[in-house]
Structure formats: structure tokens, C-alpha cells
Image (cartoon, rainbow, N blue to C red; front, side, top):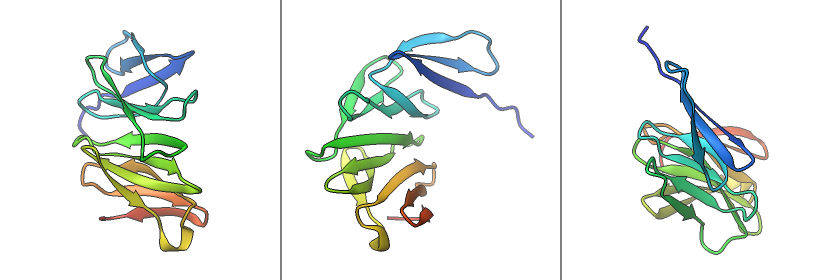
Length: 141
């Protein structure tokens, strides 16, 4: 077994903190919304509940809004170490998406069009998500 470092991010009233399990110190960070994922580079993704848009915040504090098309809402859930981002958007139904450097790929299962979302992505690019009928794993797009 190799030693692991765990990073936790929590938001309280629009502010968050990050802490490594191997260090007892916490760092307060300002986030544009609710954090949902972090990669090894310290990039944090999530979404704002006030305007339902996704965000990517870099370790230097700069943030980018993530909005799929001109949809009503974009919720971002996960980022891998290559910077690929997944989540869901609402466009007369819920759909999953993959954001690869600003290029969006929509994810809908044929049996669940309008009721899907992508919840996580690993470093191999495998995506896990859900739809009305239950959880799914997408091995490639």
C-alpha cells in the first residue's frame, strides 16, 4: 500500500477551504459556487446555485464559467488530471456532457434521452453517470 494524500473541499456560505490529510492546516478559498470535483493540479469544478452555471477555478484563483450552449443550467461534477470535465445541462430535459478543452460532446443514452447526466471521469477518460433507469459506465465516446 502506498501513502495517500486526501484533499477535502467544503463550501460554507460561498467560501470554501482545502486541506490535505497529511497537513492539519486549512486554506480558505473563495469559490464562485458549490465545489464538486478537484484534480491533482488543484483545479476545482462545480456550479453556482444562484445562476446555475458551471465553473472551473484554477489554483491561482482565476475562474472560468462553463455554460453548455445557451441552456437554462449547466452543472459541473468532475474533472480528471487531463482537464476533461463532465456534468449535465438542461435543454428541455437533462443531458450529460464532456467538456474537452472547450469542445463539448453531448452524452445521452438512447433509452434515456433527456434524463441523463455524467457524474465522474477518470484519467483514462471513462465516464460514469446516471439516467432514469439506473447507473451506467461509458467506456469511450
